[in-house]
Amino acid sequence: MSAQPIIEVRDLDVYYGTSQILFGIGLSVRRGETMALLGRNGAGKSTTMKAIMGLAPPRRGTVMLRGEAITGLAPHRIARAGLGFVPEDRQIFPEHTVEDNLVIGHKKGPDGQDEWSIDRIYEIFPLLDPLRHRIAGRLSGGEQQMLAIARTLMGNPALLLLDEPSEGLAPIIVQRIGELLRQLRSIGATVLIAEQNMHFCMGLASHATVIDKGQTVYTGTIDELKSNDDVRNRYLAL
Image (cartoon, rainbow, N blue to C red):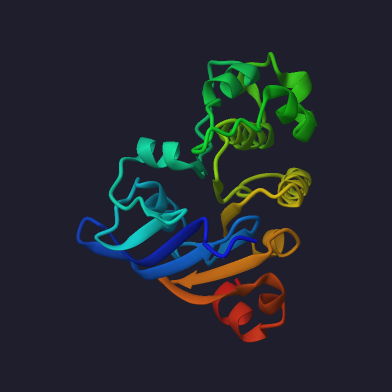
């Protein structure tokens, strides 16, 4: 793996109005890693993702993407620099077909890479293949989540950000999304997943960062987290 992180977040403070939400958050994800950003509901996971993407600009701190500062850039410039973001509410184009959504999402990566084609998407996401002409707004929640991830990959990101990908989905669909993320890890994708569902991440992430009340309280490998009862009981147990 590369010594330089794909993404490095340093000392982020983020406010909504006068209320401070993040207090010096820090994390890093290296090439090929799947990092789980874990914490209870309201811990600051989604705000961290939005801060990285420029949707909740930090008042203090730095976000480095492949060694270059992206703090303060507009979200579309951050996307062009190599970040792909799947928000919590998915935000597909509901009046367009599945394939239209994929075509709309296509762009070359920050170094001109063009690894994700529609054919490859249907190979990795076989559930979408028979739905290619279906209007996206008529898909189930799980199908929409699959489409949102697939459309983001069509932009050839250096890092894929997923905000609560398992939320509100039936267990069988959560299992399928977990299988998909394990497959992405096996082909070398770099992923940061914000999740409240610790058990969903245990079998697919390589590393974990735990936040609580807007602060980083733990970072390490997923195996180290599995053996750390204190951290899991204090910050992740419901």
